[in-house]
Image (cartoon, rainbow, N blue to C red):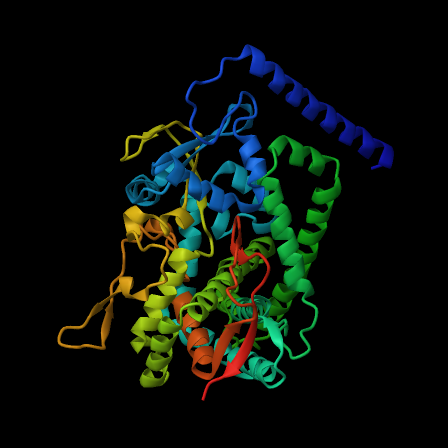
Length: 501
């Protein structure tokens, strides 16, 4: 496309935007405003866009705060051009959406359109019979009987890379970004578990991370689509402009890279050289017993695996270590339990509760959206029309005084525990209603990798905290979540590593 045409398209977009702005100001004079209008302030044509723009760097926190300002567990945000989204943190509504009327709430069309180039029609974006068949197919790969194959990978990554890296940081008194370190660790582990490829990103030299960077860029550009009016990003895609051109390039690079891995896997299958391969992709191909599996579907499955593993595990571990380092009394109990249980992860009940408590405060995926297939009425009386976008707010649920008490802001693992009968220092873990804490989703779409994810988190936490103390590099460090789709720390997590004695 010529630069002249690109300039013409940009001019047209500017004129369209200018027209909307002009109509907005005219409407202020000719369209009656609502008296006593509650927060957030909504205007004709543009809805609450001004507040949205003002809070664009903290969307999850802002939409969570609205619940408190309105003293309500459900509210509606007015969007531009008459669109709106219903937000809720009411567990009864969440259960209604995710279980009771499960078939009435599908993936939001806007999400599917924005992310389909990257994730395709694999498990994350599928619905209905397509989703059911895929979930049944992949269920085998997350059976506890398969966990050993995955934990071996994590053990090797811990002993061969993460522990030596942290030990060197301790000896050299270096400050390390623990979030970046865990990003490299989880990306190495997830790729090896998922499709038998070792990126080797957590080497002592901290090499460039091109594959991970390509994935992250493609994900960020897909998120940009979601937060942009569909008409605008679709026009940009049609004319192959700027962000859309870059997204297409990133997706092609990512898919080509994974396509080559899959091709080699299929060659190993045909030559019967894959019998010792323990990764998920190898198991899928063997289970297909020579049947042709579409390469595009396998590529999208691999991308979904990265999202479900790396995008969840890295922020979850990062926030866990920040919370533990900020609460020395909790850390003391965890370390004592690690030493007493001597590697028996299933007996580390206090550790288990600490992980769930950190997930309550900082869920890796802080919210999820759906779309109503038909008209509906929620348990709290909210009427939802066909086609309405709905947003259940996991981040807000974990910080709700109504659900967790007035001490909700405290990192207190004991809220998940009860003393064993006749014991003063032994605990039982008490699971909460999953619709009150849908960090792993809930109902039929409960995360297949839930159990193995918690096991891996316990492995990492036990290995690090047994040997090292993680000290934030700045006193009274206050972290902000860079949360929209996943809750990364906005400025990383610089720490010092101290060897325990």
